[in-house]
Length: 274
Length: 286
Image (cartoon, rainbow over all chains, first blue to last red; front, side, top):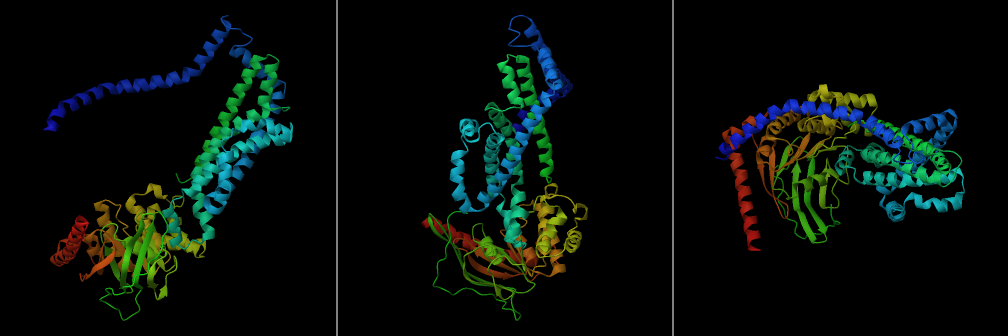
C-alpha cells in the first residue's frame, strides 16, 4: 500500500528532474564563468577602491603600483637573490627535517622500547609553535643560517615524525600475517611491508610539512637576516614601500602554492598503487 | 588483540581421536590442543583438548558457530598463535612458527596493494631465494591456473573480491606447501561468487593434491568440499563429531541436491541442533 501512495510523488519528482536537467548544465557553465572572472573582478575592485580617494593610497596601493614594485624588484636583481635564499632555507630544512622525521617515525613506530624512550619527549615539544623558538635561536645561533635551518627543521620534523609513527603503527596486521606465512624474514618485513604500508601516511605528513616549512621560514627571516623574500617584506615595511610589501606577500603565496602543487603531483606518483 | 595470553594446564586428557588413523604418517597431527586467552576479565578457554589427524592429500573442513575457536585452531597450526598447550606436528615435525611447507589463505585476501598480481604471487618464492625470473615463472603458471592471465599486471584494488581471493590462493600455493590452511576464504563473498569459487577450489585441488584444512561456518560448503567434516561446538571449543563425506569425486556444487548429500547434511544438522539447544538451555539456566 505504501508503494501506491508514494508513486505519484515519485513521478512528480522525476518530471521535476527532467525539467531541471538543462538548468543544471547552465548552472555549471555559470559556475565556471564566475570562477574564471573571480580574480580579475577582485583585482579590479581593489584598483578602483585604492584610486577612489576613500583610502590612503600610500598604505593601500592599487594593484598597478604593486605590479610596478614587483617589476622593479625583479629588474634590480634582488628578487633572484631573495628567492634563492628563501628557497634554500625551505628546501634544506624540509629535506633534513623530513628525513629525520621519517627515520625516527619508523624507529618509534616499529620498536616499542624506542617509542617509550622518545615519544613522551616528542609529545611535549611538538605543540610548542616553532615561532616561539625565535628568541632562543637568536641566542644560540645569532643571525647565522644555522639558526634559520634549525627553525624550519624543527617545524617539519614533528609533523613528519608523527605521521610516520602513526603510519607504521597502522600498517594492516593482516598484511603482516600474510607476509609471515609466505616466509618473509623479519628483516625484510620492514622494507617489503611496513615502509610501503606506511607510505600513504608519510606522504600526507610531508605534504603538511611543505606549508609548515613556509610558516617557519617567515619566523626565521623575521628573526634577522640579509636576504630572503620575508626579509625584503620587512625592509620595505620600514621604508613605507607598501607596494613592495604587498608584492612580497604575493610572491610568498605563489611560491608556497607552487611548492604544494608540485608536491601533490609527486605524491600521487609515490603512492603508485592508488 | 586485548590483554596477554597464557596457558592453563588441563588435567583431563581423554579426547576423541581420528577414526581414520592412517597407515602413512599423517600430514597434520593435533593432539590435546588447548588454548586459553587471558584478559582483564579473566580467562577464556578458547579451545579445549582438541585432537585430530589429517592424512596426506586429505581435505578436511572444520565447521562450527562463530567464536568456537575453529580459526584459532587453524592459526595455531599455521604457527601464528602462540602459546598453546598440546602437540601439533606437521609432516612429523613440531610447529614453532610460520613455515614454508604450510600455506595460509585468510578470510580477507590481504594482498599487498603495492604489488601487481604477478608480484604478489611471486612474493613467496622471492622470499625463499628464487631469482626474479624463476619466481615470475612460478607466478605465471599459477595465474594461468586461476584464469587471471589478463590481470597479471593489475593491482589488487582493480580486482573483484572473488578475483582477489583467487590471487590469495595462488600466492599461498606459490611456495608449494604440503599443507594449505584456509580460514573462511569465501566468507566475505556473495553467494554466486562463492559457489563458483567452491567449484574452482575443487578443480584446483584435484590438480595439486595438497592437504587442505578449511574452516567455515557454512555446513553446505563443508560437505561439498571435504573428505571429512569436523563439527565443533563453542565455549569452550571442542570437536563434537566427525563426519566422513564419501561422495564421489570429481565433485561440483551441483551435488547439493542429491539424496546422499542431503542425508549427510541432515546428520550434521542434527548434531548442530542438539548442541545449539544444549548451549541455549545452559545460558538460560545461568
